[in-house]
Image (cartoon, rainbow, N blue to C red; front, side, top):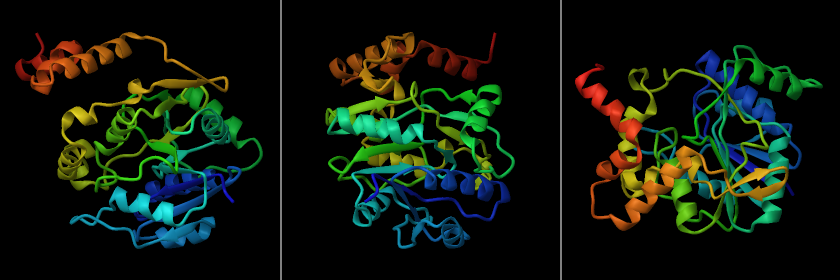
Length: 303
């Protein structure tokens, strides 16, 4: 019985670069110990890629009016078709290495109800990876030379036990908001939110947004507005990795160090709790002065 089931809804395999990075990512998952992989959807080339990479493919995922898979359906299918102790929803451009499974094992030992996440390392990859002996070390060296650690906003995977996340709104995959809601939900239910950035290297293969209308990022897509509505409003999608309750460091759970960003995030949550009747932007302007300064500059121009 596999320990982790990864499930994902890849993009169509029509764009050569997207197809290449998705194959890189999915193959890296298959090389991990005690895992299985389920690919969901009926995008062009997906069935063929699943067969080529030796992973399961389920096409009957529910979609929104625009034909984009719904996350609630993805979760339901993963639960019904898995016997693993842990599930992991993950974007199909993320490369994982064995340190990920070790982090999952430690988290599972230390907590019953939790969600595991981390910051990612962004890297330009233009060729198929050669998964031969020593590939992890070569990739890690490349990341340290050429990659950059993404800011603690936006999450590309969530690993969690079967006892959590039984009810998921009909979010649209690949649009903003739903990942923030996952952290909000975990904090609301008092589950442990574990940031494994200090212990794990997660590699995101950079790409453009040519698969979206106008080539614009998903933040500007109409489906994002629907995700925000389903999440219960903008206050519930403000949650980021900075809201993790713990970090995984050397196999132990520790409280995150108090940085300026974490301190101000705590101030924001406290203000929201006691001044819930105030408009969200007003509280943000107090807790996020740099963001407010940028808004002023955008409106009036830099002086």
